[in-house]
Length: 399
Image (tube, rainbow, N blue to C red; front, side, top):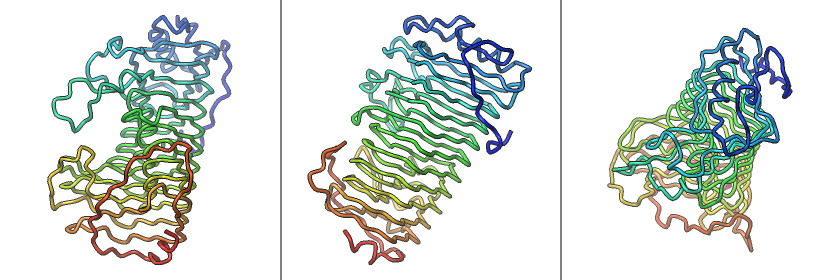
């Protein structure tokens, strides 16, 4: 069923031919016993049900301990509801995870068409001990990779709303290889110093909307990766965190692309960045047709960033090829910057940024700002290539 025509069900905790309460399938909900089997059995029954609108119910007032678990399609119905009103927790010790090494995700939904994940519940990845096991994809010799908390993959027509996500080992939510995904009214929370805990990550996905969501985390509030297009993000509160990022793109010489992204009505509170496009030297591909509109910065360190020299480990070789960045619009950008340099445009000489437009653009230094302040230093050096920037004089007048 097309996403625009689907309506979320109002689900009770009771019985019925279309209601599959995890407690009725053996889940205890005491926060101690592994309830994975009860969840898997409830899902399998709902997925195979002949009911037109089956619903898996996770009741309120209980805490369910889950090992890594994937809910797979192809289901008989294309209008399934997964109602989460209780609390889900992951094992607190990395050694207690049954996947042991290279856990890809904790909770996953794959190969589905027509799913609503909703409720008032909390999904807590208990990731604090994972955060100390630093291992990123560009590190050689990594033996233990942190899992994403909540994954939607190879799916379409999925809605996710109302839930709270806390303390994921890595990214809180990831949309991968999916289309027509709508996320709204979510709350995502992790400490500002928790590494790699992106709020929402989008990868190889199309027609994704993220609306009316609050994100506090230790990495990007929202990150948009390779193969993503037609992304609509609006009415977001972000901070602490690293802002909203496109990229990074082009790592290890890869060809990667992002296009048709609209970010509107976003407030950043003390973030290290506001809106950012970041690409690696030596990469190929493009980031294009992007609009940032009605952005408000409250003492973000760098409210506006384009960086074609992204290098978090500071040991990158100079390379001439670069991901092309073009047709980017910044409109109605207001607020304060924690540092003197509010706008960083670090563009390649060989593949310069093109058609960058700035208008109605006013940023001022912040004074006595404390909320979510992170205090990281901005980049000291620029690599400038003359750009085709319309209304630049007006845009920089308030800096």
